[in-house]
Structure formats: structure tokens, C-alpha cells
Image (cartoon, rainbow, N blue to C red; front, top):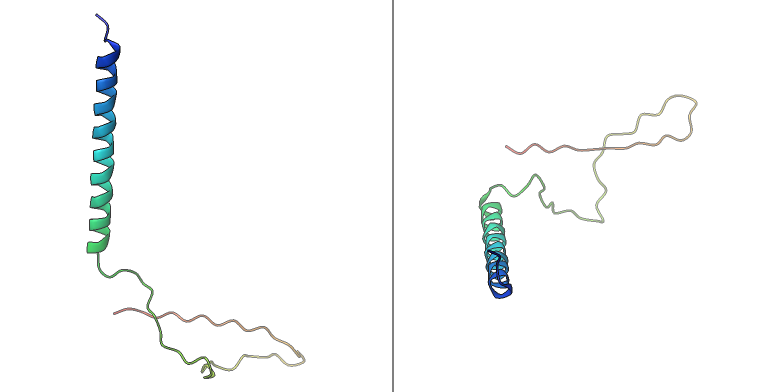
Length: 79
């Protein structure tokens, strides 16, 4: 016994509806679970003054060298 065209369309329609509902529920749960986690991330906004010179240690320069490239990285620990 084969399915008639109308019955086949009805089964596909229900399959698509169930799939769309599952996707919507999973997306909502993902957003809800993502919003419930604390803290939001390791990044913190810092208030800085663009006209203020940063207080960095002096760049070490070997003797006899005129130009040295210095790079500084800071790591803040969150307690």
C-alpha cells in the first residue's frame, strides 16, 4: 500500500512544523542559558584619558643601538 499524494504532503508538512518548532525551542534555550551565565567574559571596559601619557617602564636599549622596538602587554587578573 502506497501513500497517496495528499497524505504524503500532510506528513511532510507536519515534519517541517515539528522541525521548525524544535529549532525555535533550541534557539530560545540557547539564548536563555547564555544569558544566565556570569560573568559575561574576561573583558572589562577601562576608563582612560587619551591625552594622558601611559605609565610604562623604560624600554631597555643595548649599547650602540640607536632604535629599539618595544612592545608591552598587560595582564589583569580578575579576583
